[in-house]
Image (tube, rainbow, N blue to C red; front, top):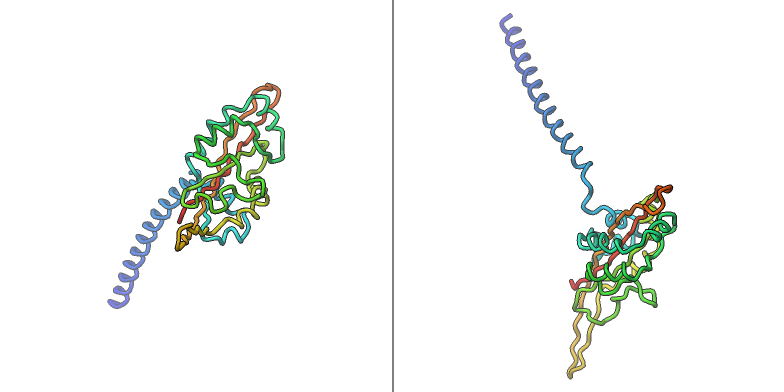
Length: 228
């Protein structure tokens, strides 16, 4: 009987221990739940840039010298630049479901200056990135362009379209360039490159027509080449 009482006491202590551990675990899970909820309600630091990074081809994803990351300077520059877009152009763009280049020279010039662009276009006439080649290979170079589309369009689909349009050019980004000196004897210097691709988005409501509710998304894509 004493033995049975001892077993009951041990079982009772064990049960109390299990309940205590369970309560602690419940408190811990509750804490994690709140933390997770907070995280979900916080905008990602790499929102649209990361979205484009997911949309590009596997070949681009596998390029060790290419990363996708948001650029705060680009975002601010775009916000300021689109203030130059007239109300009529905003209204027109808000009804255009096709991704198109922004041709407003004032907008592009402002964005170029504020975002520190080398050129306000991604590609040259030969359809390659403007900083390709061996000119000024020892310097950081940044190019970019601005697009516009109806603000109601699914941005994941917009990123897919940009990826489809530019994958073949991203895939051909130069890994390096060799510069041969003109001296005697000549020497050669190899410059390896890293690239950062950034996407910024600004939504502007169309307000010139009070009978119409719509907006336009202005999308800036920049590519920055740095010497590794």
